[in-house]
Image (cartoon, rainbow, N blue to C red; front, side):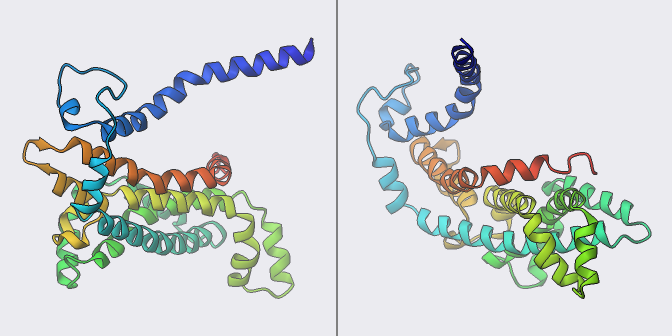
Length: 281
């Protein structure tokens, strides 16, 4: 009877999660549905079906991959996101460790200021940043995005890593220092292996923010070959008040694949990094 009750409880728990699962997966299902429909079915305002009724087609994917610069946009987004993420995580790790383990007068206010900086909306920053990028001669290049993305990624990742570093016992580092290790060695060989879930979480957040950024990519890049996915898709597949919904949904679905794969493989680290140190700061 105990075994039966446990199984019934598990079934009940899964059934209770179905509405939330449906709510989370419905946008992906609708994108897939729209990308497989023919134009006549997409633009039929009387069609409210949740299935493909007039035969599935891959014409939108073919047009996206051959009739646009989608492969170049995809590569640009991947390159910019990976490089910007690597830079941001390195800076955030050093800053977070220094603020937690090497406090100075006013460090607490400095820590709060870092998080407040993240809260500043990009719509207030892209104009002054555009002037900086132009002055440096980086306009209309992928390097302009690599340089500017850490401005909004580093503050949040620093705050997140501070919370995680605060949960690591100081005794581990003190023992290493007594044995002759330097601060850099302590950080690289003691702290980072223990803080791996937090670092992975910061990396995922950085990659997600950089991958989905739109305003800077649209403002700083003019050439079609240098555009990222977000800016290129909108600029090429939305012409005035005409929305090419088939290719748009196909592009959105393909663009979500790297993020889904990253979170799928690193979900355990992601959850662990989020919940650790939640009450520290």
